[in-house]
Every structure is written in C-alpha cells, then in structure tokens.
Image 1 (cartoon, helix red, strand yellow):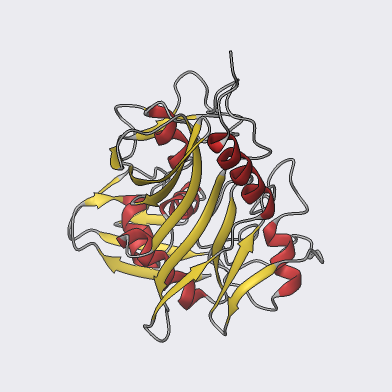
Image 2 (cartoon, helix red, strand yellow):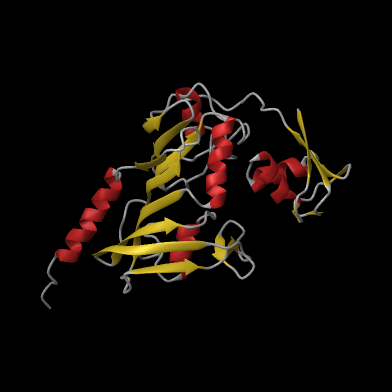
Length: 307
C-alpha cells in the first residue's frame, strides 16, 4: 500500500483534496476516506466532507490494485481505436458498463477484461479502465484507459471540462428555438432516491442543445454536455418538457413509438495522454436508432388523412 504525504495548499473538502492529490474521482476518494485510509494532521478522518485547511498535513494510504474477481467474458466489442495507452469502444444499447448487484456478468468490463490484456486499476476491481460511463440503454463512444498514467490524465480532462462529448437524441415534441442552454442543478430526487431530478441544492449541471431536424411528434437534437452528472441529458430534457423518447424513467407514458432509449453518444474529443494530440472519434448511429429515426421522418412527411 503506497503512502502519500502532502501539505494542503489551500482550504477545501477532504474528498476534493484527496481526489486532486491522487488523480482519482471524488467518488473513489470518498470510498478511500470511508475505509479509513486518509488522515489530516495524524488523525484518521472518515467523512468525505471534512474540512481541511491550508498548511494541514494530509496523509493518504493508496490501496494496492487488487486482483480482479470479475469474470472475463468473450463478448464481441467494436473498437474504434486502440494503442498502448487507450482504447475507444462503441458500446451497444442495453449493455451495462460495469458489474453491480443484479448485473455481475455480460457487462462492458467483463468484455474488456477478455479483449484487453491490461487495464488501468484506478477504477477499482469492478471498474478497471473505466474513465467515464454511459447509461445501460445509451449507446455510443466510450473511452478506456489501459494504464494508470493515462487514467489520471484523462480524468483530469473530464474534471477540467476539456473533453468534449456530443450526443444525438430524439426528444418528445417540437422545439421552437434553434438552440438552448439548460443550466439547472441535479441531485437525487427527494421523492424517489432511484431517480435524479432538478433540485435547488443539487450539483451544478449545464447542457447545450441544438435542433437538427423536426420529426413526427419529436425533434432530433445534438446535445453537448458541459458537465457530467448522472442521467444529465435525460433529466434536463425532461425539465424543459421535452424528455428523451423511449425513456422508461423520465419519458412520457404515451410518447412517440420507438424501440429503445433514443440517446446515442455520437462524438468524443480529447487530448491523447501521451502524445498531446487532439483526437476525435465518432460512433456510427446504430441500426435500431436509425430505423426509428427514418420512421419518424416518413411519418412527418406523410400527408394528413382526409376527414
């Protein structure tokens, strides 16, 4: 277990300073803190929100990367790119990203462990190499780190918002404006902890959208994430009265007829962690998404029936 000692350069929350010091996510830092691995001025602290002041002595015991017990499974994956540091994969709709209760197998991580000999261990036993996530029913481009150095660098780009992510979405109803910015905080719904919602004391969340095409009872939009909150696009579009079509959680009960959640991570731009080159990858529109889109186009073009 690696021991890290650091003098705090500014005031802040313990989880924030641990995350910045070790190049990990705040959620991962919170798990280390809860496990009693972090201390301030020689005293172990177990609360992520504990206050740390400038000049305090911060100590962190970084856990060794454990041998994974997650099964390697020969599940076909479509790789858009690979090198010694990263892999870019086109995740299909319906695939869970990492194992969890009720989804121990058949996940993207199970498939990655079979396909790739090395993955970053920063994400832990159940999330090796996972830099960012997509919802189960969202398809599209995902970035995977093959080593810890790449993982730290890519996580920093996420934190600093220099990684650019665009989605294609079909949303319910017609959007009058050509584009818009949704700037509304998101947190756990007070009424249902399994759902996210726009709430006053939630975390800052910003989503840009641009209208691409009017459809039958719906609109095709390009969505640009400026932050990365859980279910952000789905919650934000629902909050302005245009939920994503086919959404079983935030969608309309009698919305347009589509076979899936109409949300696809279309493009991803980032800086390569080793070469510094700016890269852009695009995941092709899946067949089921395209067929639903074509039907909505045809229905929009069809003449109205005579009364």
